[in-house]
Image (cartoon, rainbow, N blue to C red):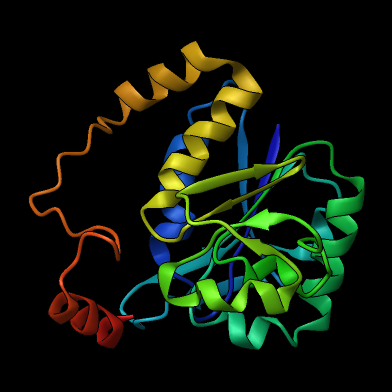
Length: 205
């Protein structure tokens, strides 16, 4: 199974690496990091570099696409090559697509009329992108799965793993990766965080 993860300058690292760690453990999975041009891509904080080993044109029909989010999606919305590739891959691919934030897939109109989620700081943009906002970590709509951003990509990938290989395999992957969250603070959503923490988080997002 060919799983494509397009990357670009300004992506959120965990949006790509979290799903990679889960999906790479699927039987017969082949993960491909792609970009318009092969080479290094800097994450949004400029502290980490990921390598696209192949250009987009090398893989026209992946079975699954995992589209990361990040500040770089602003520029991505005007990247005709990337948008055309996503559109064509969406139309011909047999497996699901995942987008986080939803802006990553909005350019080709993939989200039109669908429920979708994204990072809490961007929820108000979903309506303008043709989607109905849903405040959940993972939202499945046919071939499209959206995730709430950053850490929720792991939940998305486990959901996708269950769809592809069954719940037992997804549970085994969850165990193999030691994914058993016990966060030290109960402030992982806007409903739980105090106004002061929310403002601090906005400054960091």
